Length: 137
Image 1 (tube, rainbow, N blue to C red):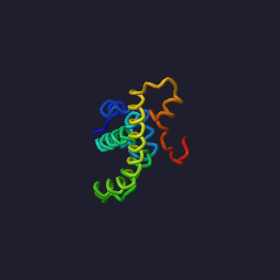
Image 2: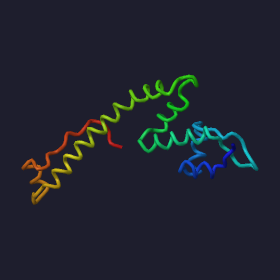
Image 3: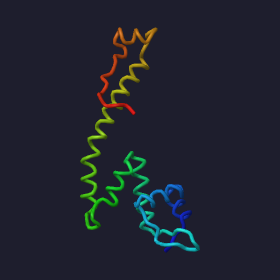
Image 4: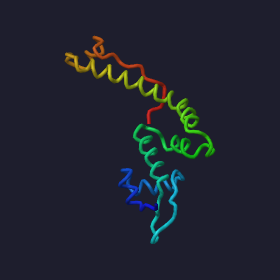
């Protein structure tokens, strides 16, 4: 069954412009044209649902490309996920470490009765955090 880009957009919650972008990136493929307009099949909807979930969870376009098209077609999903997971878990652990440090700092800030920020540092109310050597962008 051929679906218009509008139908696909409504079913997936992804804007038509994003659908065209994912198509231009080779992540999905239109299965043809009807009256000059792109049409898509159920496989495209399934792929877009995976793309949407992955994007909402913070996967990069490169990660998604690897997952969807970076393996031979006979590579089972568990092998694809395993390879991606091994790389992404390191990144997630770094993010969790920073988030945990921020949470602790914010919680201390909620309990702070200091008059000045200098007092917070001097009396260890909110000690400075250890900054990583990574370049902030």
